[in-house]
Length: 71
Image (cartoon, one colour):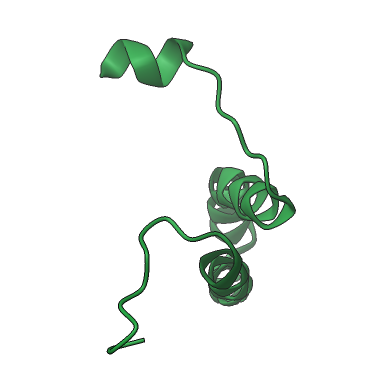
């Protein structure tokens, strides 16, 4: 599994999937900026935006089919 994570290319086919992946890659940069500037609200702003991107991804790209009875 570890070799797969390193050697297997990551395919992000849908624009919502790509946007979420790009935002997730920014996490180290955001944490470093918050640490350097001592502005912790930077992390909150990032996470708020990430939640919106995840919601868009979840609504558009189904990984698991939703149960019609429970939504």
